[in-house]
Each structure stands twice: as C-alpha cells, then as structure tokens.
Length: 278
Image (cartoon, rainbow, N blue to C red; front, side, top):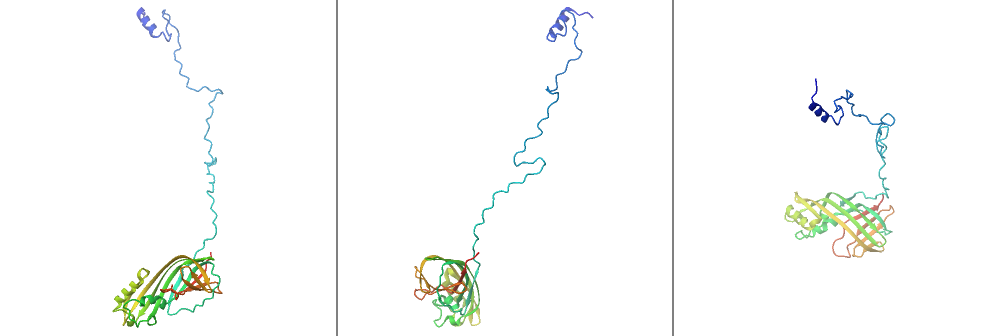
C-alpha cells in the first residue's frame, strides 16, 4: 500500500522524538521490543548488602539469648535503726483492799511502762458517795465489790529534772449498794453517780433485792510534763502534787499519790511501772 505525503508527514511529526521512522520515507529498523526499565539497584559487588538485622540492644533490654537481664536490686533497704521500744497493756484491779505500799525512794530516772494498778473501792467511790442526796450514814465499807476489770496503757519518763506521764486507763467495777447508800431508787442512784463522774465515766444500776447493783466505769487520761524535786522518798512536782515512791529490789517502780496536803482527792491506786525494754 502506497503512503501519501500527508500520511508520511503525520507519522514523521508524531514519531520525531523517537526517531523511529525517517522523514525522508526510509524506514529505520528498530528493535521489535522496547527495553524495560532497570528494576534492580546498582550493586557495587553484585549483591545487595544485608541490612542490619536489628537494633543494638539498649542497656537493660532483652539479651541476645532472649532472656531478660537481672533487674537492678532497686533502692537498698534503709538501716533498720535502733529497736522500737513499746509497752504491753497493763491491768487495773479494783479490790476491797490492796497490798500495803511502803515508800523507799531510790533513783527514778529512766523510761517506764505501766504494768499494774491496784485501786481500792474507797478511793474510787469517795467522790460518788459525797454527792448530795446520798444518806450521810453511807460509807464505802458498806459497799461490796463483786468484780472488776480494767486496762491501762502508757509510759512514765523521768529525767533528773522532769517527770512526764502519758497514760490512758479504763476500769469497770461491779458494786452492790445497800439501801443505806441508795437515793430513792436505783434509777435515781444511777443518775446521781453519772452526775458525779461527768465525762470521766458512766454507771448503770439495777435493782438487786433491797439495794442496787451498779456497774461503774472510770476513765482517765493523763498527759503531763512537770519539773520535780525529791523530798526524801517523795516526788514533788512544781504543781504541788506529791507521789510517794519506791524503786524496789525487783527493779520495779511503784508510786502512790498523797493528796493529804492539797485540796481534792488524789489519783487513785498504787501504780506499778516496769523498765521500758525492746
């Protein structure tokens, strides 16, 4: 088939850039297949280098064998310091009478734990029986102690110049009050006892034959620090309180307040404290 001049012109114009056909009518042999683009990466040594197989393990990370390294032991434990000193709970007894106490003096300096307090019914009931309305003939000797239980927790610290006491106590006694010691009836008697105790205790009374049986609880808290001096076998605080005392042969410290030289009743009971130890 003969090509016209305009066909040759169109082909020449379209393929000029590729120079596949000569514009003078002579065909130029071209490779029947177009070469494909270079799909590989130039390699200087003929092979693609292996990429780094991994990231350098950070310090403390997973080791090459897959095991976790031993963790750091953490913050070292602080020194335990000196042993902690504490006191065991002591007991309170309410008795008809307590063992005799004799002052003997000695060196009271040290730290002590409350261990035992023996109180007589007279010491506890005196302020109660002094309430208005209680028959004048009623005395503590007429009252019977039927049982008691109590606890005391605290310390006494004595230096050469100061005595410091921090102590809490609570004791409950069961008492029988004969008719001569009741006010009208047991409910009125209970109210009179509660009035006498105020915030320092409580009472509940029930009819028991001709009299009343009363459970009376006495609470106390002491938090004091006072300069003191020794007068023979007595500790005398600057506030005027006097405590007869004795450091006994067993190492225990016993004391009892003598309130005869000041107004008001004294702190009840003979108090025993033991050396504070680990």
